[in-house]
Image 1 (cartoon, helix red, strand yellow):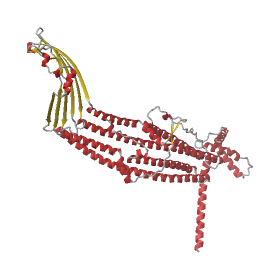
Image 2 (cartoon, helix red, strand yellow):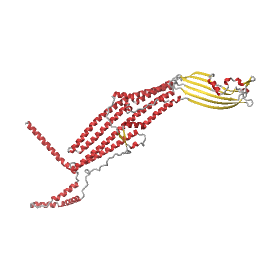
Image 3 (cartoon, one colour):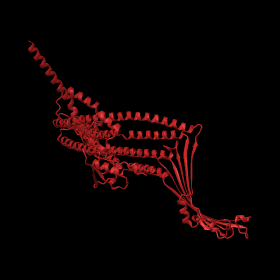
Image 4 (tube, one colour):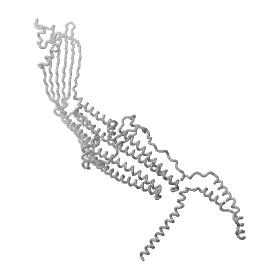
Length: 633
């Protein structure tokens, strides 16, 4: 019994399902016919109906009874008034039928397709191509990039600043030559004047040489003076009418407290040394940033080129679909309205190609701006063709190793340490200024003398004046030099100079300011360390996320390709619609683009990881040679 009832229920379900299916097919037939035939205008329907009436009104033999005939006459009499418009309508329809066929409806009319999208781009010649590897791009950027050149000149400026700061310790020499002739009156014979003219004439020639130098190590200062004088006099009281007086003097001043270990000059040298290190570190940082920018621009160009190929492939798929749809419409198996959706999709795909070409130009110009320093370089008119493909290379360091490398290699931390060292130099200098000024002073002088004895003066009767002049002083200038260097006539002088302020508020204020700036730098340094750790964590996460995105997008692309192929087969079998085929084409195009984007983003994330860990130079075989400060003197 149960078996019979089950069979009955199944039969009832089958009948119901079959009936519903038949009803749905019957309801869909007018829509299908309407879609296949297109939209028929109302006037054409009226014309077709009017043309069918005369054929139906064929004269037949009247077989009606008499009563029926009487009724027909009455009806014809009542309808005579309306027969004239009907006749006019038929004539009008006949006239419309004789006219030319009306144009096709806008819905079923084929679209005027836009021109094909070429490969021309503004300012780029199609026949001029330049292949470019990533390492070649990095080398060109380091050689030609204007920003790198600017920072390179900044390093040279710091070198010259340091070099010039040593100039205070250069040996400085000076010389002076003077001639003076003087005639003055005398009122006494004991002054040696001429008794006739009551005057005395002197002619003096001096030629002096001075050399000075500051001592870098101890802050001392010395000066050597070599003074020479030649005096010719008409005085009868002078034993030497012409005499030479060379003098050699050595002065030395050595600070004992203030300015002993450090002074303004040595502070400037040490500050300039740190500035040179800062410039070198900033140059390294800028080189790292430029290399990272080149890597990002390179991979963006790779993506843009491949994305343009994907867009063109999608155009070809849509064009093939349109061609197949046209064949089906001609065969009567597809509604003409489906051609419009395919044509619209084709135009949308062409728009994607145009946007992809624009993206190529933008990415290419960005890369060219990093590689070129001349706006007239022929590279601006060339198509850049990247030769490196993005890879899926895993990172070589863990989180802890990456953080340690970043704290060791990041130029920003090195720059912060150099700024702290500059503050330490300032603190030592201002502490030095708070000390009293105690200087040791030493003077050593040697004097020489020689000349021509007078022939006028005599004393004690017949004793000549030349006999009164010692023999060692008789002679010319070279005899005076021998007397000078014999060191028989020398002078020594030693002393101490002391100076101190009762209250040195200037030095105290500078010390307090430097200490506050040092504490501020310490806070900034700790904040920088924290930010570097955050950068490393974010960069590693970006690498992991980009790799996962690529794996997901790769699977998505495979699935989208399978979906498109399956949907196309269903459409060919009549089990799907043109809309779903176009949708699957769009999904496949987006999936292919997302896969390439994820892979290039992974390589960009690796480049950013190199930057935040300070390994960009090592990873790309770039060596920056620092200037030797010991050679700058």
